[in-house]
Image 1: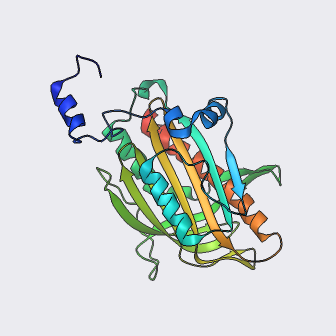
Image 2: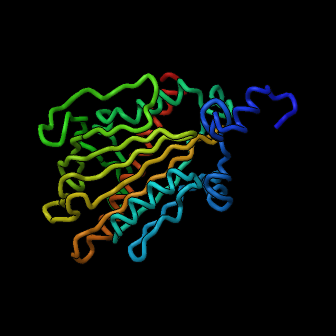
Length: 272
């Protein structure tokens, strides 16, 4: 630390009043979070994707203690037969490259991620069809998994440490379903955990039972960048080819969600 640093900041860091990486203090670098190999790929424009079917375990997960624990807990509880991980980076526009996000920017990103209604109509590129395809035909926050009454997307002036909301979402792979979302606000990051509360079907074929799909989406501040990690894991039906179909669907889902998040981030940093 520079000798000119304010004594109040020095004492705050020494006594833990400001956790390292918290908003307004420091952002960890991409290399610290993603590791040298993944950082090189990301900065070269690649998007690391890992699909696993046997002995699946987190391998691309960034080096963030809270995120690692949450994903490892999900993995241990589920013991999945399919797991897909992706890494992406979002480069902040020049006006926002201040070394760390502000509290206002962090709150806007958080509220953008809560705006599940804006997922309606998002698209992704389908390599098998060589065309764009709609991912979510419908998406809405609901008041609970029983009544399923649509409600407005929640908005918070300051991200709470943890909240749970419910959503009804219809996608073209798994149909119309109810999900639980747990939102975690941590120093230097935002983490969102999704779990299915209804059984998923692929076309008309049962694919994933109730509570057998867990997904994590994390946004970590890294100075001029945001590091975006997604992991989806599931116990899939024992039908030939089903795990491969689900793996491909998870990879498409991660890409669609990243594109959606990028548009939310654009609104946060540029106002457009």
